[in-house]
Length: 350
Ligand code: G6D
Image (cartoon, rainbow, N blue to C red; front, side, top):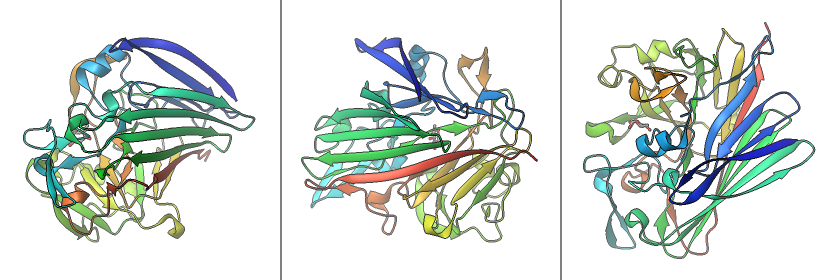
């Protein structure tokens, strides 16, 4: 499998390297060492036209200055932690907060802001980009020195497989995700509102003040959150539901039925014929629909528009350390954290 790389910038005196791997079917994946971040994902449409189907900032300096999270590895803990506080082994911890009084996406110096090391391997039918970073004890005030590995594999089966591994020398928290935004039209100037979303999910997590998880899981049945039969994203995003209209869209976790019960999520763009299937061992996926235009930086000469992309952020339910029943994100010495998410890219020719 074709593999290339180039230096695309420098952060904290570390060269930022971008690798690109291309499979036998014209799908190419690019990722950079800053934040182990996906920077491009090019796939063909029903007419064999290849376009980047994800949102990406065009230069490293903008990425550092504005931290859009596009395609970035998020951690140590994805999502919000209420007041940046949690209790572990009978001790209360106060993390560095970065959104009012709360912690968002790992805090001010989250994993997306760090320069990772990378090893690239290319074989006959797959290529792997192996990113590693060691988060020192006390980074963002998290306990424990955390060794993290993220492996991106592109296969000739048109899969992007994300594997996480982590270990720690003291009890800590770990709940990573990738913050990729999809726009299957391949044109950032078009919205993704007409994308068809199908979710194997019966429950969603409601949000309280400050977009914090309320701790309640609600049935999707009879609400705009019901994507079990598949429907256009806009049917939810543009609804007047009290959980949606104040946010101008979705920013919610959905509890996923296990992958043994079939495809957990499918995103499909009728215009291009592009489709992404999602498989994960995580208990939830956060769907955020880029609910406002971001004009801090330009992409192809324009601000990233409202609804320019949609995330499928697989993870343990947000704020799990403070919400009983949301899952375990505590990692202890001697344990190896592992998690795998697969995005599979198809084209419907019809
Ligand atoms: C906003 O609330 C949303 C988050 O869910 C998202 O990850 C972030 O923007 C990029 O804070």
